[in-house]
Image (cartoon, rainbow, N blue to C red; front, side, top):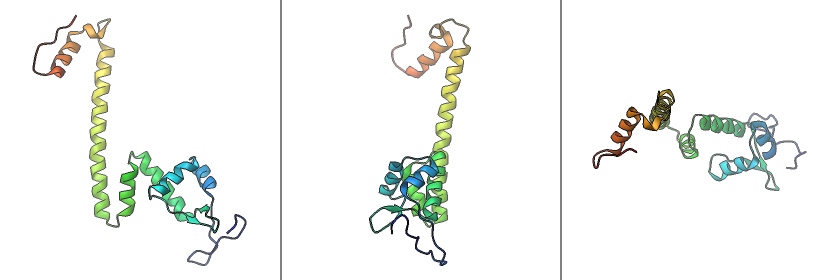
Length: 151
């Protein structure tokens, strides 16, 4: 099929609109190499015309939108592939539960980091490294062993 040839009909008999890799990439604000990478990773399987050019149908567009939404949620390509490959809704939910737990842990760590930075910014000492509270936190972080000596 040349780019100006009509698209073959879909299962309903209606002509299917085929898009090139460049058109799909532009539509979603991606570089074409991203779509190629997703194909190499098994996330996309676009049709090919007789010349070997990728041709994307509406199902492929839905898949690209799903991949992008999953990436926005912080899911890795491996997790997205696992979700897409599973026909079992319970298995997909369990995968998402595991991801949600991991995300909660990352959020908690980020909140602890922010609290530490805000504490340093709110410190009355001109140099927060001279603050007794900061030094206590360092001593606790160092754990058991020789006592820390501060200049």
